[in-house]
Length: 388
Image 1 (cartoon, rainbow, N blue to C red):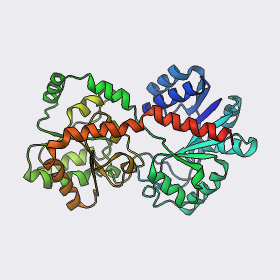
Image 2 (image 1 turned 45 degrees about the vertical axis):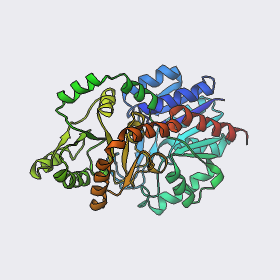
Image 3 (image 1 turned 180 degrees about the horizontal axis):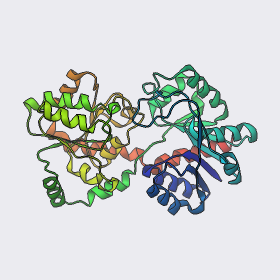
Image 4 (image 1 turned 90 degrees about the vertical axis):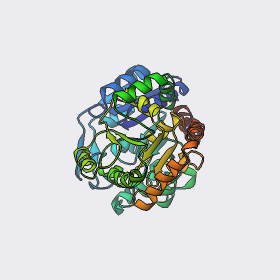
């Protein structure tokens, strides 16, 4: 089956999924993307998998709305319509027997049009949740309902995405769950090859001591870092042993540093941005993973941490928690309720003897969310759509 995936942008974690779908199709997957926004390293990885069936376009135009970025809360910039010159023509030239797309907007207009005009089966992958879409305009919601008429199936990140799509009227028989996964096997392999001696040396070099609560991600308002520091201050005033380590950068980095100093918050280390090739060391060095996001569709850092055998404390505003965070491997808390947040940190500390077994439970859960299994679910939906 010739499949053309119109994605606009992608990052490293998508490469194993492309690779597996390409294998399943018998080397008949084409990926069309916007070369102006995809990092060179990702372009090179995709070309290594697909060769000249990795097609980068440039020169996109946009109509309406205002530019936003992934630091913003959802639905802050109005509705913007992308126009990529030559996109529809390029898609048609790949002679697709089935089309894949990502999200209702961006470059999905091309598969929608080709489905409407040429009846080429179209499967869309989607990740928003009722929480991330709580401020979606009526125009945006109605556009999604209309687009649904030209989509044969929609792959949902998880049950929260499924719940949102059902709420806006997408039929149950159009939906399947299983769309997002990190490169869990690669991370697990990297982490397993790092010796305890290397980790001890690494921690000494970074001036980290004691049990480590790790956060990986941007330092921006949407990630709830101020709430994390407020809770950590209350927690660490009584419990001095553990260290909170944050890796990543963002617009709040300087003000967070000032807050830590001004309020004398104990045992916090802001280590800045790190290259993705280094992140396995931080997961291996950590004892617990902590994320206090105020809004996320499906934070890939959660399954990344789980693949490295970490228990997870996850915000209830993160769309991945129903599938990934269970009583046997973690905690779900409300970062906007400081009393609940502090109580969760204290419970994590009180159960520190269980961290090892909880980390093993994380690894057992994430086995069901590998790139290969995601790719196989997507491909099964493709076969089903083609045979209708």
